Length: 162
Ligand code: 4NP
Image 1: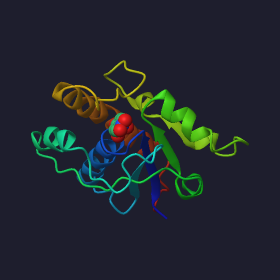
Image 2 (image 1 turned 30 degrees about the vertical axis):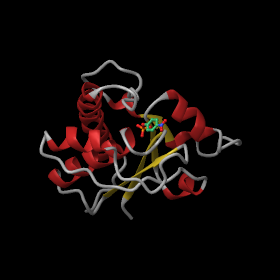
Image 3 (image 1 turned 90 degrees about the vertical axis):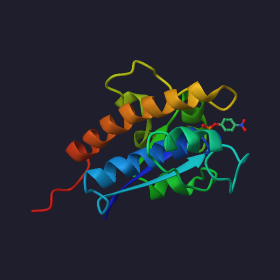
Image 4 (image 1 turned 45 degrees about the vertical axis):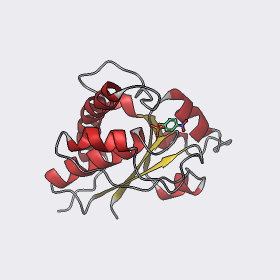
């Protein structure tokens, strides 16, 4: 069974699809496509069905990456389906856990920036209402967090195949 990760933001058109696509690039580079699966979702229903924001896609393209995806809303069933759920900011974290009244899945939900090794940020800033520099910053920050996350998963979560 592959290890399953879900990235979550508010709209699922900027930050979480960027995290998902960047993580998939790193997973492919590390030849771990059979072992780790990524998805993303939004806590809101605002953009259901929409592709990643064109400003995010443009920022990614400038670095040689193609971002794909279709927005969907986070649902309770995701707690069961995924091994690890990464919130981009504290509001996302709270909104995710508001669907887990009993705290049964709290151990699966973590903050994305906890995996940063270079950046000091505690949250991935929402770039939606800002200029293009915000999108570039989110990509740089997520590169750092995704690298740290991949190292963590490889060290702690993958089953050894002997
Ligand atoms: P995201 O960014 O949560 O990173 O996808 C946003 C997208 C849309 C909105 C806010 C943030 N919005 O208010 O529509």
